Length: 319
Image 1 (cartoon, helix red, strand yellow):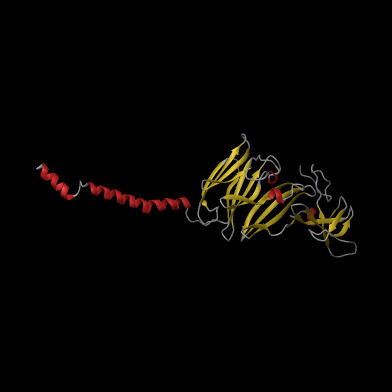
Image 2 (cartoon, rainbow, N blue to C red):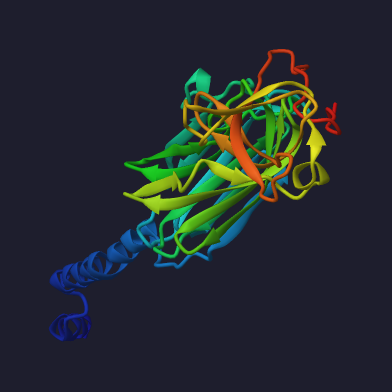
């Protein structure tokens, strides 16, 4: 009976060794054909469309963040973005690391030259905003608040060849010889342009507000112009008296002298011009007997101790 019984089981194929090998093979085929591609797709990230503006971090001192639902590389797929601050003490940091998809993309201050961070490395808080243009190109706007009035890092970053590159550095765009500090009040996307609203402190005219437009061109962002209109102010919209003699040039970049205005002349400011080597103001004035407003551009003064005499009466330093 036992032999007959076992004989029937063998005939039914339940105990045949070959059947188990066949089942094992089918399981392996299923894993390689179904699970492995799914794992690769997960590693690459799902397809996403970024909003135009996303505030990832807003003036925070927490120290570590991870984001996994936005495209920061520009390939249309979600990336894993990690931002890790290096704490100096209980109240401040002295560096941070950014990883994208597990790989180091940027490290401050190691990834920047010393002249690109003229205000040291210590900061209290950090804010990060993801800005995506109409053409789907993403950029990161990183701003650190420091014990110093400026910096140590304020700029717009773009992902290139596995690294984050600082393509627009406010610390060098606003020449530190003339500018005491600069606070980005707002950063907004308009089509393929990023609009920055800045509150800055200049040794020549104290605090002022300006707007800078960065337009997408040749694969990156570039200032559409280095001229910016000064924000609304009684000093900038109404005439005041010059505290010193000024030499006016025909344009923001001209070397040809147009006129010399004497100390005590009535004038007001309308625009500012930034360059890596100089800063100029557009001075508006009216001559006696004329009904037309005339203007010219004067060089800004600079000083290391920020106590240079101001350009117009009515201005004051905001210590």
